[in-house]
Image 1 (cartoon, one colour):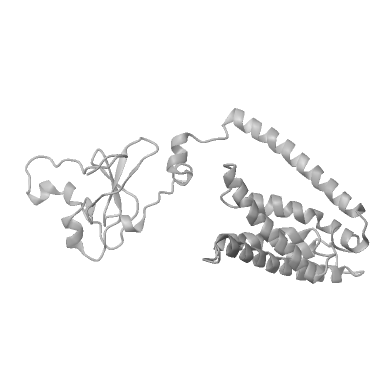
Image 2: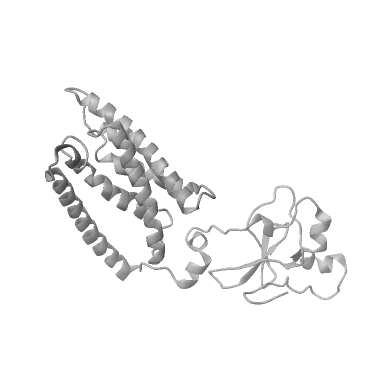
Length: 285
């Protein structure tokens, strides 16, 4: 809101009124976008649920769509513009999926589609819009500006990405894609809480260190070495196929030693304990 209101670059000679109108219409645009997102998710789910991502996409798209004309359109027009922006931004998501285009944060719908629609809005509404004057002059100017911006963006982006592809490459290795870039690029390893043992009972953890409810202990594979890492229930540690335990997070209450690694200490066997079995892809315990 501050961005749109501040873009009038003044408060004198009637600009304060334009700044106030820009602020009000920005808020109303987000309201309209939220309504558009709500309508879309209701129809798409056949009134079974409300998708919070689609709702938020509508809200953001309403803000984007109303920006170009926020100081020249009327309040009800701002709501309408935001609603259309929320609908078209969410609608493009299915098209991208059909063509196999990955857009996890919805940037194409919010900034490209809703932004392109918002660019032509001043030629539709406002004092020079076709719905007010019947003239297509302003609409033609807006479309020309949109084409110029798209051409410049495509050309410069293609050149930049071409240079990046020649130097470091645009795509990560296939095994990085399978594991996920959270781990390979940002060192963030996902461990589901239900894959860890119940912290409420030490005895239960010690009885079955490698299985829970008859299921094999889950394992993950390191992208650096390719080693299989077994998640130890309750201990919040992983064990590689060499038998060494690597800590992935600290347990402030206790750090249980897995029974499979403490066989010699318990006197159950005089021979060196075997490594904790791991579960590679396609194998069973």
